[in-house]
Length: 422
Image (cartoon, rainbow, N blue to C red; front, top):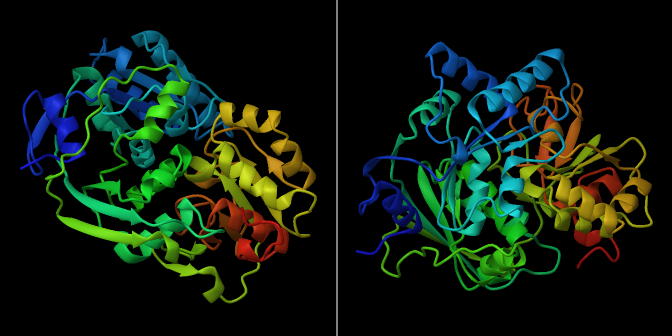
């Protein structure tokens, strides 16, 4: 029996052939932490008398959740993290303004195909877009991993999602993954590795694949990945980065479930409060007035997402009474959007551009909601209280849907905006 991508990567790390259900004690290729977890890691290391780390060269720390610090407490936590990096010789510290860990790790080539990444963030599944596997773990587990170099994992079973055909104009990768969630549900892939296949996968750019993999965790997945192909290879060629011969799943690999999506049937979709898998076609919704629109996050804060929104908003103004926040996923995205005139277009349309990072998505700062307010967001979660207020309501949609809705003042099908369909 052949192996899935997860089985191949974990076999390399284990030094032996492993299969779904096996337990392994391994050292991942990369172990990341963020500012919202670094304080706890420091506490665990100090409490247990750890004075050296097993492999500081495999560690990176990213400041993206409190970027910039919004309270004295969060400023203190970031200071603790900087001192920790100095104390243990961690050279890779991506400080305030550099961007979201998943975005930076992929766009910079830090993570390579065939590698395994752990991070104190559940959306580490995003790194699977380059043929890697990534997952979130807790701060206590991360502290142990940093101290000892190895941690136990169970090799996940894999599911195969085939994307076939081509998307219709106006539909996007975000609409695809929302459609999948509608069918699979938020519990449909718990502790499984999602692999994207099909004759339609080649049409998705690397940023779009990041969106697909990012929301794998919303299905409950341990990993979500797109196996290495020509699109991945081009990304690393552009970075002048060597990738060798990355692993690919075998043709006879075993999948516990297989699902197929006809891309031609996908239309603009929206996830309604307060469940990410409560998904509906925009046209089936009653009128939903909005107070805020959020474009950004590790799901849809890339250059291409900002460009789509700018195409809709160019020469127009967002609706009176609506706030539209734009948070680039990284400094590199921000700089590229500035050079292309996209930031100017968005600002002229009435948008507010914030520091690269997680922004309002985490409900900490830079755009939290007031009581009973409604937000249309390009993010990944719409749980109760997600954006800082338990009575606020969050709808999820594509960047095009977010921009079109900000323009109209209500949740709007982007295909209804003249000249907005690519």
